[in-house]
Image (tube, rainbow, N blue to C red; front, side, top):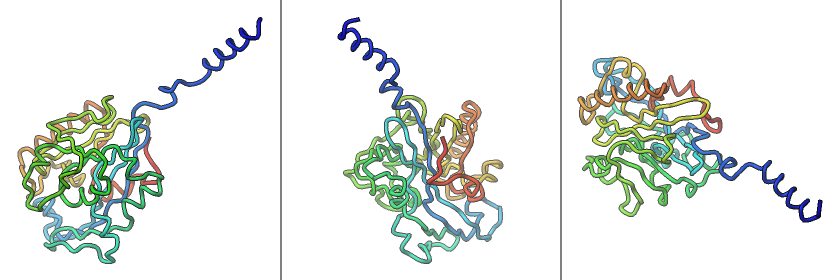
Length: 274
């Protein structure tokens, strides 16, 4: 065999044994981190669970979720404002029946510990626009905001929620975030006009449905209870049924954002689900 033929054959052999770029960069989702985005003490559980434990205080959590896909990072919800971490007693609520939020760790610090910079976040998707979910949206001024049009344009009694210059995709229903079905925004209105939940299909864990505030506790889910302060009770109930249908179809687990007993059993960053 001539030298040129030997070189050509070696090149072909090398190429055949190397993974292609598509193989090296795995498609779909490969990691989901749960981040601690607030710890709270609420004064009256019946505010969320009508007729249950009236006047009884209880503990809540507020989680954010960092999802890594072959096309980039998605951050689901941003929790209460990082500035609350500097308040030793947390942020007192305007109504004692509501939640006094604290922050042991900032969102920025948790991302930094994972080696993730704000500029690395391709998308920030929010379940809805209450302060305990959008407190740190502007840490990611370059990230595309994914929010329902009905939510974005809702004249919230809490005032402005986003900077006008923040890039945004105003959704009108379900949305396939990365175009491959691995991360699906599911429209679940009721808690607010444009509330949404997130279906994530992990390779080992399987499908997970992140509730947002469509439901707050496992007991509320089991009994289909609707908080008195929800925007629309009928739409909430319809969304709960829609979630149940999605879970049945996808064989999905339900992860309830504010449910502390559930959260306490889950892995939190730097551990992750895959």
